[in-house]
Length: 257
Image (tube, rainbow, N blue to C red):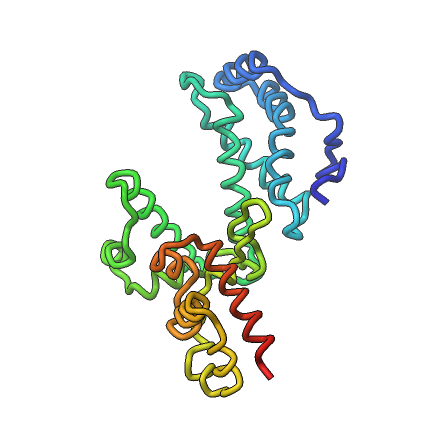
């Protein structure tokens, strides 16, 4: 849908393209209240909107809706652009268009999130950004909760509520043929030693692992550590932990009867 030729009645294959000089002249006229220059400028930058919405393909969203929302971001960028700043309009506009689309996607998520929860999440993100910029560190949940005068649990819940759902099979890291998936970074709280050692056959199979494999399995499934935590603790890369873990699980499966 994102790649279709006509969006919102606009033939995207025939969109005009303005030069840098043309944009600057039109922006000057726009500041003086020239309506025709405004329309020409918008039409001349619709390719920019089109290029941005392509980043959001594969989400099942209606291309016409995304295009319209992107145009709102374009107009906001046009109205707020400062000609005195030494920056190209596209450099300024793209983040505003993306921001407008992301707000739309959050507000129209199939999992409805109340306005109060969204507002709390946005205030939290604003504080995090401010502290990172001013103090060059990550803000803690405790200090954010104290500043907003709410419980820590409310902060965590609000941030979780605005996150888009991810597949556990989605790669979190990739280098060459080595891939680490999101599920590899999730703490395992279900497969604790209570569930593992209850099964004697599996327990016996585990005894056939080498020392490093046994240590990784213990830390991952008995202690509930993530691969990142295990890697930091024993001084190897997460990719190596991932390989060893998969190898250990394969050995257990082969010896499990």
